[in-house]
Image (cartoon, rainbow, N blue to C red; front, side, top):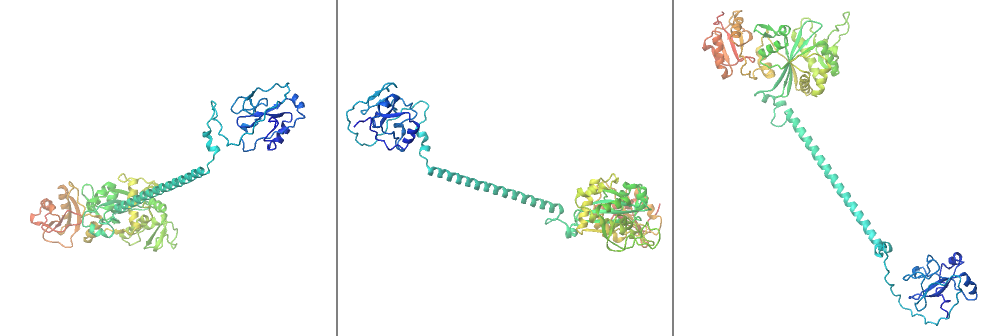
Length: 558
């Protein structure tokens, strides 16, 4: 058997057709076998192809797909030399594994030589190829094991780890968000609770604090009151209406105390006068001091409100709703019989002009007290519509664009009115008239009902170096006795308070004090008036006086 003509792979090369078409001009023949028994091919030159026509040619067969091409035909080997995967290019091996040498030249005809027959190599397990010599710059095979041997299970594990990791991260993120929400909720609740407690404390509504119905219990001790005096000037007529606006922070109540113009007060030098005259003659400062003297209060400021500003104030709060007790004619009416500007009835809505007309209206034959009651109703209606927010109330005051008395700034007035507005809206507000008797002196019931309970005249202690207030009632039967006593007391450094005349003359004079600490002062007052020490005794006094004096028939005028 000619080994050069025998091709054990003939007929099994799936690429034979391709080689026949693509390499038709090139013919190959087996020139030997490598050391593993695989054939080695060599291209036959064109000159020799003619001579080999008679020789049977076996079509080139490529190795099966499962065989590696590294040991068979190499289309990139150049076609001139046999391919040796472990040797050099251009070296061929015969059946014994010996190299043939270099390929014959192209112009030399190849003559087949008779080779001794070699027994076919025994089938043996394919030995492992010798280790391949590594070339510089090459990568090791184990570095690409993940490509040659893809591990689907490892990818599944990686995907599972990614899934569990992402799910864990989502859980942790959800926990963090939950904790953040809980912390934010706790902070908000704490702020709400603190704000609520602070408001209750500020409003005096915490258990143990005085307020609301506890006002009576709190009245037994000193109370904090803020008081300002309000003068309504009627620019279209004569007269002034005066009221005290009172905010009792202890009992959480507000009040308007209407002061008649006939109230007896003293001017700067102690001369008796009336409240109405004091407003015109002594101005705001002198009138405040006169009121403090006669009522035992401490007025903090004066708010002068002319009727045009009252009209604007009602318009700013959006009209008022009050109960009216009379039909008020329209001042602009040209003839009698026209419809009244303000109608009598419950919850009548009044505009600014209507409110001014009602507040200043005094029908023929009516007392001043009737007009003061209407003025008080208008002011309480304004407070019910005014904002309880200090800033908003201040803005309303500033919108009036009026010039305030230096004793009261707009922000202070706004804050004060806001507190009164809160009292009025809550029903903890009342309007009361200070009752005065004939001659402008306080009546006996006024001391307990108004001065003591509302204004705190009796409870409020005078300042340390303040002059002692001495209330004098003339029961001597002599008209000039009260004036004579006033001169003596003022010259002695005391504050004179006119108590009016007694209902009947009494034989002996009396000097009384309510507080034991005032006993010495009462004794000095008796000496100043020329009365004996036996006239001094402990007892009740006028609500607006530290020491009370009743001049009897034994009092000698100077």
